[in-house]
Image (spheres, rainbow, N blue to C red):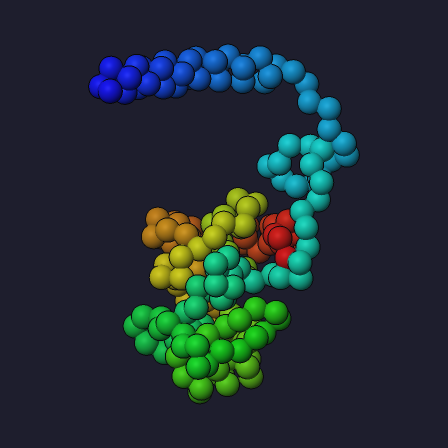
Length: 185
């Protein structure tokens, strides 16, 4: 029994080693071939010839597992305390097809009365990514309120860079419409 197991392990290891040799060779051979693709997608950073991205009517970044805006954090709470609060299922509102949660009924009503004030800028995408021309997901715990706007960032480094470089906001504003065109919505 041990000899059979050893032989099976040896055969499996040999097969895996062969894959490590064969795959790079196969990729090198296909990389030099010119792909034949249909019309250009127009999407920045994507190869030409891909179809346009689908539109589903959604603009706000949401958690793909739960469907909640800003991962279920209460957007009003960013302005009320030292930390944002998680929203509760008892206080949900569907706004623009996205489910928003709030820590209290008062916060829900404040958002319902003025969603543009409380919703994050750039639909919750990281403004440093938008400034670079891409819609980068953000972490709701990495945020800054500048003036009357809430900005969410992917990392603490992106937040710090954004706060130190005022030109990034202008770049993000300039590129937002073109980035928004390619967000699956």
